[in-house]
Image (tube, rainbow, N blue to C red; front, side, top):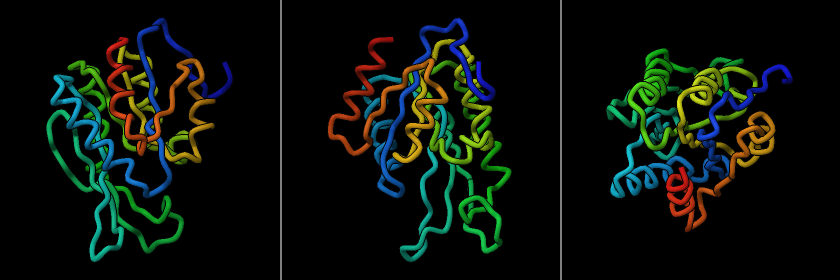
Length: 185
């Protein structure tokens, strides 16, 4: 196993799905609609979404929404300091809520765990990376990673043992594709 690579750990039932689209293309909005549709169909959903916060049509940050407890706190705010990740400063309370949401999804198993989003920070070994790998090593789960199109090849390479399908968030059949994957579990 190469450094930083994760293998399937005696867990043939774990599924990984990539929910993809361009940067700022509505991946989170579509994932929110997916979660609502899946809940109406009787599925239980865990993990979190990270909706954007806008003020006067300007992106000023992100909040985090725990999908099991409906708790919501600030995740990141635009930073004027140089050297911050993509111009954002992350809030400890938001990071803590995200990690708690992912642990809860393992402790109180759900049909789908959403991680919004998995990107360059995680590919560098930071952000939600350790949490996602904990999920992948846990009891059988279906995990949906929200990713930008530009990182899909690297995420697929990193988690090649899971052969993750890529679903374009903008595809009108995207929700049906996720449901089909959930039914085959």
